[in-house]
Length: 299
Length: 323
Picture 1 (cartoon, each protein chain N blue to C red):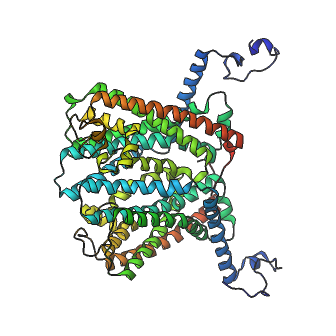
Picture 2 (cartoon, rainbow over the protein chains, first blue to last red):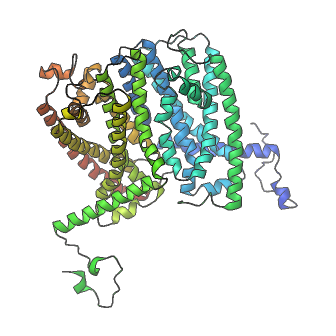
Picture 3 (tube, chains in turn yellow, purple):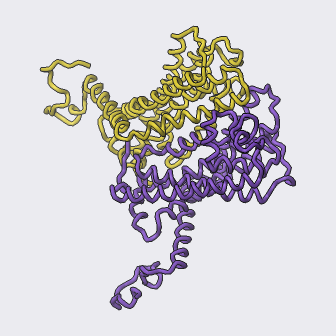
């Protein structure tokens, strides 16, 4: 957003007739404040990457080895080559799921533990800006991790992609991320309400979700369970859509809707999750202001 | 000299201090007794921290959901490729390796997360450090609770494998001495790994929560947990053969399912090339597990001591790093 150099800053103190008039912000003022909030919350995550380089080993190299373990399972079973590609793609998408769960869903609860949540509720900005800032800050490391798994996995294990519809593949990927982060915002509200269960829910929502999402095998093989997963978990439907598009013509991709339909499911998920997140966060703010319980530490 | 003789008679001794005597020159037996008490207290605290957030039914579901889902992922991979006709011995291989991996996750994460919990969330690490007992004993106690939970998850997953996933198990063929020795040494090796990770996260920032899982995931590749080592390139097989976890898994597999698929030997394996035998025998298994565990334990204690010293020097015990 460009602002003329001689334009008065919206952050300069101004006299107002009443507190109500002071609180009446222009849309530009609100937008600028929320953008600053996004940048402000993304900053510690971005700068943290430079200050603690050990994450390169622990969050990129070692998770790649985990993905490799599943590649070797398929090699031991002498599986068709596209299955190795499924594992590599699944390993890359795992990074986004983990980012959503650990650095978004559980984050408001941790902010409460650290005493920051009170500040968020009292600051004149949308809580969604905070969550978006967390997402953007975390996305840098996550994209790097996913990219490393995808590129090195592809080169090292000789994955051959067969892509006919690049535009749809990119659209499905972006929609998957939007739906995933929307779900992350909903979970952030829920985890805050559930208190200490947040930590355990984050733990419990890893392997079981990987299983029902068909992380290392086609989700269609799960039958009715897979169909339910495609209906409610963005990772399941996004991963299946991307597999169908990245390995076009593979006989392994059976029993699931076409990628175009899955893209529409993702659009619906994105709208529902973001709408729900907006409602939940407003509800939380109301609870925090009226009952004052959400910001108490150590429950 | 006791504190009683040196203290003025009118000093009020706080309740809970035994006889009001501070004894800086304690005997070895007293130190051991204090250490044991500290371990038990820490284990009880760890158990309560882990379990009192919910009711027992939900807690059991939570404890077994991860290992069961991990096994199901592998079983589905196996069934998808075999068209539903996977060999039972492969199922047993995968079920044992995957369920035992719960111990590694619990053991490695338990100690490291205790450091992070107490430093970043409860802000108690500095107080624990300056208390009379060794911080390592406290961490071991906290970690023991998580290992206990992992054990229940592993047991239930194994039972599920036998009852529902077609794993043939005959209790009369179990080699109990090998099972006991393998489990005892294996758990020691896991704790050693946990101690190293506790030392690592003492030095790093709050976001190290995922580090133990990443390390366990990395080891997953080279220890023959879910596929035989012979599939790996030779350098990776070397890493596997020097790792105590490989021998632990192999020992437990041999004990529970004698004659099952070997994770160490077999055609194309480094073991076959080096030893000339197709699979390691019981004596070789125990010796390899004993030797590698001894080295790992000594290295872990040395690494932890170095880390603790460095953390003290740099004031890392009370440095919170929220991001």
